[in-house]
Image (cartoon, rainbow, N blue to C red; front, side, top):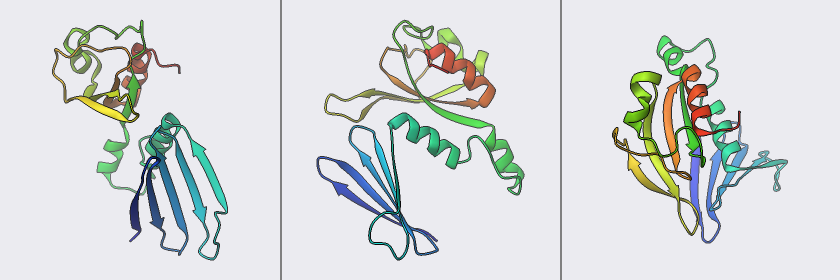
Length: 168
């Protein structure tokens, strides 16, 4: 089993070290501004032999790929096949988008589109995100700048992304 160590980096963010079964190590630094740095260290190297820097959105997209949101190996059980159709997205409400200023109920996201809203976040003044609502009801009105965590089938989520004003 993989060992994961976590450390606070004051004024910077958090560091996670994953010790892999083969003795190598992956280090992930999550900066307070949302960027992520990934480093790979061979079990015999003192310095990283590979690194990459990702934006917040790139990190989330890569994370969903690694987590199996887009593809599940065929060898997994039937339950995994059902879950592979599930897609969870973090979508920012764009000013002037079709969804801005309208409520969950008004749009009928669950009833008409088969999509649920898990949570709503907004940017903090000092960086990071603040929770606005968890499992908001039909009266929640989408506000420009809020980030909405949604879940639904892949085909339905593509339509919802357009409603949020996402550039596809």
